Structures are given as structure tokens and as C-alpha cells.
Image (tube, rainbow, N blue to C red; front, top):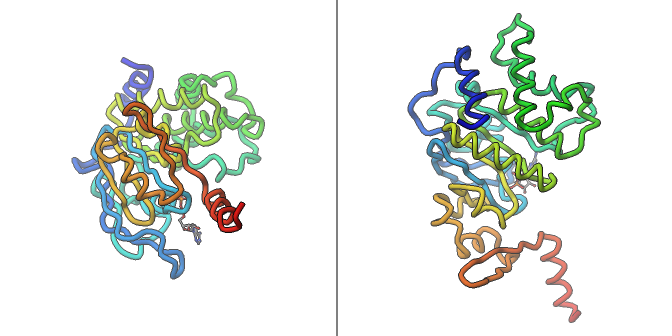
Length: 288
Ligand code: ADP
């Protein structure tokens, strides 16, 4: 049994959360979304089966974060719906663990790492119970699993980017969710943290959890994920990574900003950002 399985199994003995219904962890049905009158997602449909690591991949502005917002009930779609274990988010939230983008959080908020992890469990305690010694011990075990128990009492503003991301992952682990939604957990972390996060995701999968990750590094998609959802406003392709993460589909999602490096049957991709692509076009037009 892995450490994560042990942590999750131990927690299962006191947990009062009922098992989710026997429906797909995530079912996105015909979702169209707009900011004011500007559409950003068109008729997106896909289903995520249980126990998989799923990457949501697409260029900047493809609507990945918007899709997560809709899944989590933070934004109403103009059409369609997203169901978690067959329910809208409001009824399914106890089965969901969320890891926001590190940059979207106010790290100056005066609290320490242990508190952040414990906050992940407040939802389970009910209104009048404060976390006690048992909760504290469990939160510490989650920090330990991410290799940062020694930082439990450290103010979060004083943590490095990689350490902050590990705190978020420890918090998600403490939530003991069935479905995890993570917005760019690998962004801006060092190699060791990236490996630690990947190991955790794989352990969660081994424990039967479903993990959906917004991801921007195309080079690691094939290695990290079982399934991929390729998005660019519309759904370009979706399915097992070996079938769907093809040159044609990636080029369709990224348009002209993709270059391929082929090497004896292996292939990788290099993506210029939108500004870079625009600059090189202008340079060509100017004859330089
Ligand atoms: P991604 O996560 O794939 O980079 P987003 O979902 O953040 O894409 O954004 C999709 C599109 O919606 C982009 O064109 C972005 O500029 C626009 N957008 C995102 N958030 C807002 C907002 N709050 N108001 C207006 N437009 C937005």
C-alpha cells in the first residue's frame, strides 16, 4: 500500500461522507460559455471515467480555466451543463478537491501552512466544531506526505513557490476527495516539486481517485496523463492520450504556433506563445 492509500484508508474509518452515485466523475454536456457577449467555449462535451489522470490542454485563452469555473459552479454556462457524479456541483462538492492556480491566491494572508491544510477539512467538521488534535495530526500527516511537515508553522508568505504548491497539494489530500480538479499545479515549480506532485497524482489514481489537471506543458502530456481533453474554444479531441494526443490534433488546437521535432518515431512539440508567433510574422513581413 502506498503512503497516500494508507492516509486515505485511515481517514475513511471516521469519514461520514456517503459514497458518490455510480455515475461518471465528470460529465460535461454541450457547454457553451461567454463573458458578457464574448463566447469563449462552444458546445463542449466529454465524459471523464473514474480512476484516471486527465489533462486539459490547450493554448492560452482556450477556455480551460473557464471550463473549471463552470464545473465548480462559479460561472453559469450559456447552454449545457457539467455534472459531477451525476449532480450539479452544489450537490457534489463534498466529493471534490480543488487546487487553484498558485497565482490566484493572496499569499500575504497571515496564516501558516498547517492552517491552510486544516482549512481543507473544515467542510467536514460542521458548524460548531473547531479542528482538534485529531484534525491537526491528520493535517500534519498530509504535510509530511508532501515532504514539508517541517514547514507546518511557517507563514505561507515565507514559502517558496514550490513549497506553496506542496501546501496546496497537502490541503487537497486532506480533503480526501473522489475527484480532484487542479489548475496548473506544475506551473513554476522546481523539478523536485514537479516529481513530488506527479508521484502524488499517481498515488491518488492508484487509490481509485480521479484527477483532472489543467496543464500547459505539451512535452509532458504523453508521460503524465491517461487521457487528454484538447481544447481551443471548441473541443478539438478527447480520449486516451495514445489515441488523441496526435500531431494533427495538437496542431488543430494550437494552430500555426506549433513546431514538431521528430526523432525516430518519437515526437515532441515546441509552442511559441501568441506574442512570439505574432512577432515572427511581423518580422517576416518587414523582410527581417
Ligand atoms: P485559459 O485558461 O485556457 O487560458 P480562460 O478560460 O482563462 O482560458 O479564458 C478564455 C477566454 O476568456 C480568454 O479570451 C480570456 O481573455 C477570456 N476571459 C477570461 N476571464 C474573463 C473575464 N472574467 N471577463 C472577460 N473575459 C474573460
